[in-house]
Image 1 (cartoon, rainbow, N blue to C red):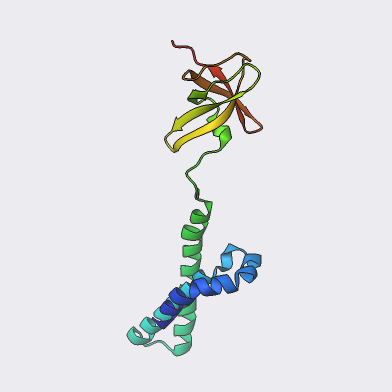
Image 2 (tube, rainbow, N blue to C red):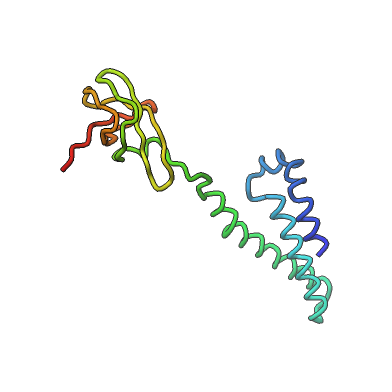
Length: 160
């Protein structure tokens, strides 16, 4: 129990202090994960000592094996999936190709304007040029044809 409380209280402190050391070792030796494993080893040792008649050496070895198993389970089923998860709901500008938007600042034939694109992950305004090199007036519906150098190339959307 004491190791669990120390893990909770000192985990982030040690993570900050030993950040460079653990960064060089990678995510596998996460200090919070190490202290959690020590808690599992201690808990297994207490339970095995109290509820079994095993020799102390066997209790230690079995507790260490249980701790290693818990470490690997937590690492492979929690740490890796969480590190691979998206940390942002925003989308890349290149994901806007094919999306429909509305011109909010008129796009001249040879210049730039601005379009508003709404999506499930939020709305955004982006700089745009006319793909067909024609003027596109404010309020017109457009489709994003391509994205180049962080600029959307749009074409007026004809009603079907």
